[in-house]
Image (cartoon, rainbow, N blue to C red; front, side, top):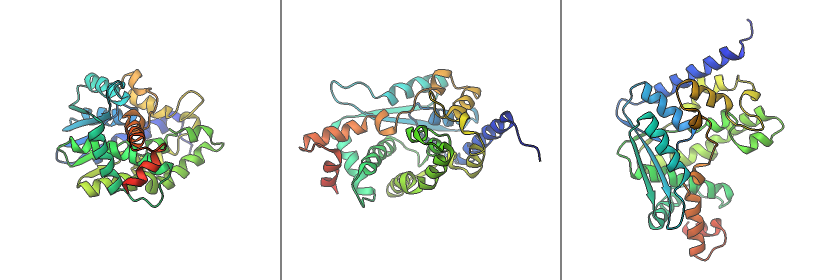
Length: 272
């Protein structure tokens, strides 16, 4: 059987992504966790092209004197460009504190380390979006970073493709457990089209050089997003973790300092 060329593999990946998103769409109206990054923007774009009934939700944290969170700024731009149903909310410190305490109660906490601090920041975005939504099913871009080499650790790794596989093996305990625990506790469902079997298979057949180089990460995904109709500036927006793009990491830091703690993990320990 002859080897498929780069163009054929890319086309297979594109079809797999569209089919996975299509399969994720429920019969009822649904929601998308929307940051204005390439993952959620691509999901929203395909859902729009499929004429699905959905709303995009973006949340952030801001106190007086702080800049508007980057995710809010970008999400608004993309939503306007694509004419999406879009709802945003910027939480103040009091609201953010309630959300963070709620996330701490939900999530398992064997050890309060850097990963746990990250999970609380990302989890706050999930809970925040749910609090302003009416829908009971959310589509999420989770998994994209692993299959398309989207993290700094992929850039640093000598065997970059092997690092993708390692990340996929750990994604359940690191990311899925967090999001699914929150969904179960609050009574909603999360669909993750980038973790569809066919998408993973197609993505992992792509050569690592088509995913990451010195300048860009998730290259082939950004190209596919652009080919499907996403504007260049949106398709190539640089990655920001959910806790940073929303500024919920800043909320945890401010609350820690207010409570007399230098480190976020020490503050979070007091909430457990």
